[in-house]
Image (cartoon, rainbow, N blue to C red; front, side, top):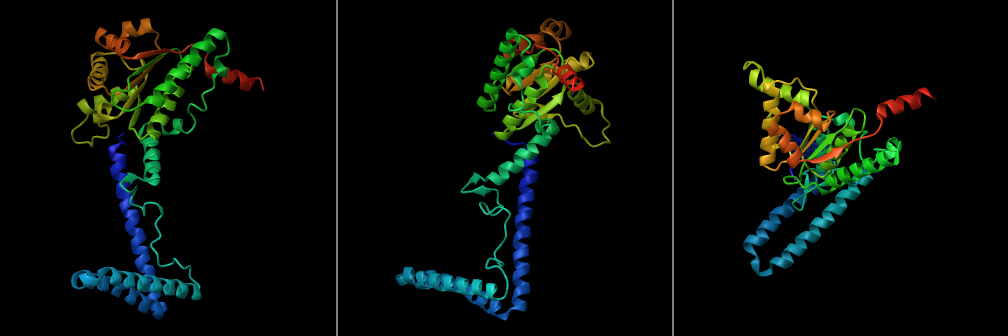
Length: 328
């Protein structure tokens, strides 16, 4: 798996800074308290001496090293007990001088025994929601919130959409990055294509992969900016991620202006990702015949040859919800 590298680098820096703040806060508390309670300063001096004693034992007394280290450890433990008791006697918690990390599992390093800590994974997942391009949708659209009740207009529609749901859910469960395969959603507006796309994105992000979700119009705009934008302006629309992310979801294919540039851009993205076996999900309101007429044969042959086609049918869910609301 590979979380979004920009998110990872930014959050690791935040963790480093958070850890440094915790260490500095502990030093500040220690300095202030040693001035206020002289006994604490004396105890800390004794604790500091145990470090020198360990070095001396290792360097100069190998013949009875274990005994010396055990004695030093016993003395160190006794000093810590006295220190905690002194803190409590002066109205402070016994751990007041300990470094107070946000995460006690990893001490704000993000890793435990070489494995990513749950706290770092959580932050990366939250960042992944936002960098996916559909942070708001992911808060409400998941497999759990997808209702097949809206497809109960006929047994045929329900059976077909239940199969679509199971296919898409199984795809998200089995997703393993490169080589996971591709899906293409066909069907009219309001039939749940965006909802299931969001559900896959949420599941895949939570599994630790980098997901990019974009409309066809937005993608073409990014590539237009990259090609035609002024060199004096910052590149706010980098296109590398279209080729590098673990899963690219392109929504609303067919809504973009159709011209040589837009079609060649779509072909370039699809062809490059297919050649490197990078997974994609495409979504369009066009039917398969309209799709074939709109795009080059080189595009349609790849979509119908290398994508698993999911046909969405039924009655516009938005219209159903509107009728339900108006009838109340």
